[in-house]
Length: 239
Image: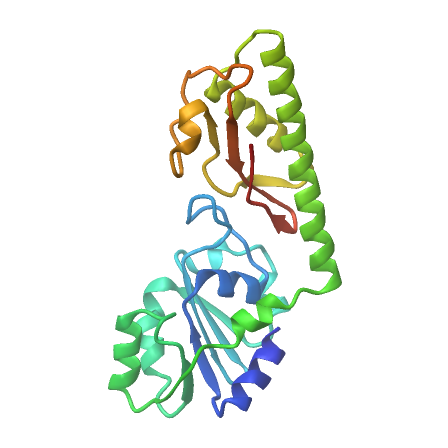
């Protein structure tokens, strides 16, 4: 991935870039974390790629990385998050590809204050991420199949319960669905707060207050949920 990125930078007459989008950093370096951003497998970081040198800036520095990980990324240096501004100033003389919409105003200000030559352009990483290889496609399909299996089981449970007159609550359904998710192989967590809504609650946009309202036979029931599994993330709605 880094080799491909360098080729694309050269095509734009640049020899360095600053990456601030967390999903791009996680994808480029094949790293994930659930410690920083709720429901997202990304982490707070900055990344500078300058020639064959790669600098990753993390809260906690290299102590957060899996043992031996850096040996698999030639040219990488892992630094504390706070070291990022000074590293930007050291790009003096580099021709830096910069997407102003994807980097903080403070970072842009530092680069413009130095003698760095800036090429303002959307970076190539989104295009690179969008092209999935066969392994990624299989993982995405598998994740959605497993998540759909959990949703189907939860829906059948809801139908049986309401048909028997049990009238389960929104909160009870939510807990049951999430327990099915947690039992899936490769489960890593929810991808957002589960929505479980019955009756009029189903018309509330992004309803997130699943309570003791009971689901009754004939009522509309809406579930909107997603899950992180090894290799894929899901997000879909069932009614």
